[in-house]
Image (cartoon, rainbow, N blue to C red; front, side, top):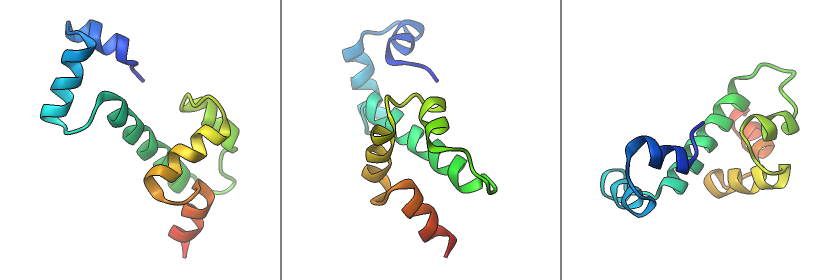
Length: 92
């Protein structure tokens, strides 16, 4: 995973330029894009893992969330459900 500072340095642009480029070509800010990609990775990991699945705390660490509620709230922002609710709904 690349953070914004590393992306700015490797692209040779300022943070404001990077935001303009993301908005122009992707339609989202770099932070929102990173949040969306991280959500997609969490969902794929959760959905494709055969039981017994990884513990939520392991996923928090692996995807660099600050704590479990941060991951759950971020997931709910995109899915409208907690990770386990979304998984139960998808498995019906």
